Image (cartoon, rainbow, N blue to C red; front, top):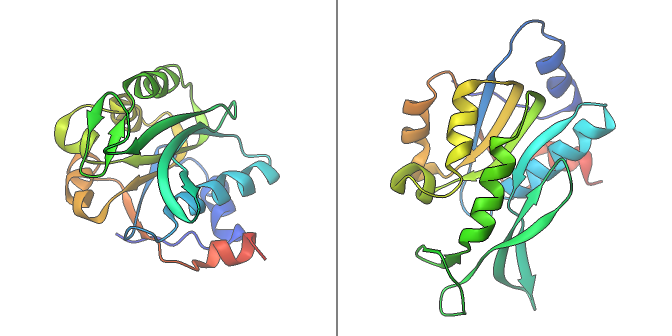
Length: 189
């Protein structure tokens, strides 16, 4: 099933539609399609509406126009730590095709997820190959999603991992993100 949350009205409808706890939106799209920016915009807009968002978002770190790292941002506290640096630079922890992922930051993120109580809006950017193929990384996010202690969850999953995510959470709806998504146009005028 595909759903489109593309306007303030459609976001509000998710909360005003009554007793639908545990609604899950699997946010997907190609690399560079601004999925993280979309998640941050959703959290910002929810805050304006008085909807409390929790979870983790992974904004890219750029230097001189080049992506050199990935941070991990706790939406509730605003705390942020470096999650990954390019392979070849000094780094510890898990290694992916392009990144050294910091184990301490993963542990920090998992602690945040483990202590997350029920929330209106839960955002997790992202569950990737570490979590869905290797069983490491932000694994507490997998359990949190399954527990459905949220009214609405938006979880970023790469298109290549969407089938795995849909097998784990068959109730999830798919939202394809493309650059210049309508929600971005509304929020970033």
